[in-house]
Image (cartoon, rainbow, N blue to C red; front, top):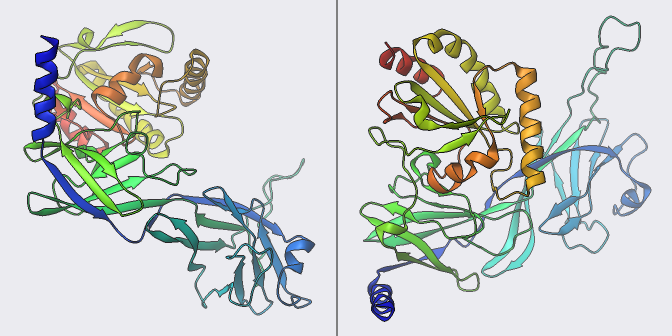
Length: 410
């Protein structure tokens, strides 16, 4: 029997369709970092090709610009007439060369450049660097009624620097005669593409966008995700950084584990534990309209959505509306017992201060539902379930939620 199963699996693997494509020759800019600047050190000033003017200001980031494990010497020279110039040691020789300067255009606070990056087919890492000159009010001193107004912004003022420290790899794969866009979002320290452990995307509906709510983006969780593309189920098989070749393979439908949460689907039952240790089942709330709100204290839009939920909960709870907030402090999951306890403590303290009154589920108890069943990769994700246990909406937020509650509650 085991031999038969092996032969069947082998035959399936030999006949599975494969689709091929290429990485784009250039990467796209990714996550950005914002940090303060300070007066440049004498060593940085000495690295300039000529001494700054007596009234010039030389600024440097408090933390050096760091890209994929490599740091770059940088500075902004600001003159009393308002001219500002970025200097960046692009060739890493410890000094600023004459060709390592990028003036900021009048009225512009950003410049675009690139640094050398030998990585497979890639030769450059694109950078966008922007400065800020906004000043904050000084906090009130003891005995003062209000904060002092911020000092005036001078032509030489620079307060912070914003730059992209990461990138996205993109490409296209021919699937049944149509070009499907793909994207890989590496972690900050990652050089290579690793579909099993990075955020990956397939434009499954071929509309040129990666729509997380439609399951077109997956977070790496140790195994390569399977996407539904039309009637096919596809997964990345290999990506060759040296040649740029992408191979996608077809998988059996059984490998597609994501619950799409489409309207009319029955929501699978699951158990969860609240912040006070109480044990529950989703099925305990059959007959009520239930909102599953996936959130984290790190997520600004989640916090804003909770504020919007307060009046809705107060208004509709007496009519059979329940909210179960599903806390995900660490979206990659698989924490230690101490990590789960710390996550719950942080979220519990936040909720106590915010005053939200509905149920809160711990990450430890709902993590597998979030990661392995629903494949949550967009926060907040708000799934509304009807009294019959069937999905009403996977995007029940804001005014949409209010309208749905009015429609589906007695």
